[in-house]
Length: 98
Image 1 (tube, helix red, strand yellow):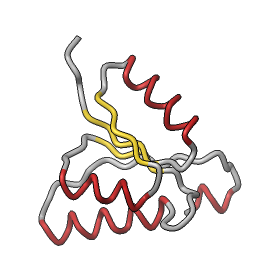
Image 2: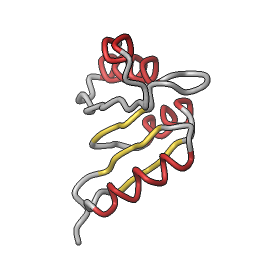
Image 3: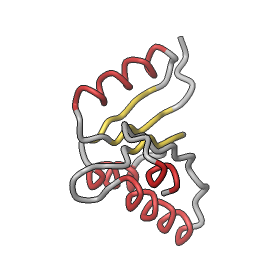
């Protein structure tokens, strides 16, 4: 089967990265994983992704700050906006609002 896109998963939990990668690979996506936002941002400097799935709550740089940094780089360079879908196990109203 032909790969239909390249997705970056950024999550500090190894089991969640592995589960998400397995699901997306079955849907014929190439998947790259990073265990921190810092590593994810490093990947984004050298690789083009069709989508980024950051966890909202991670130690160090969280998913919201990672998204802000991704958008700032895209805007400064004139690059296309990569779709970003934030992931979280939290369902509190303040997390949805963020």
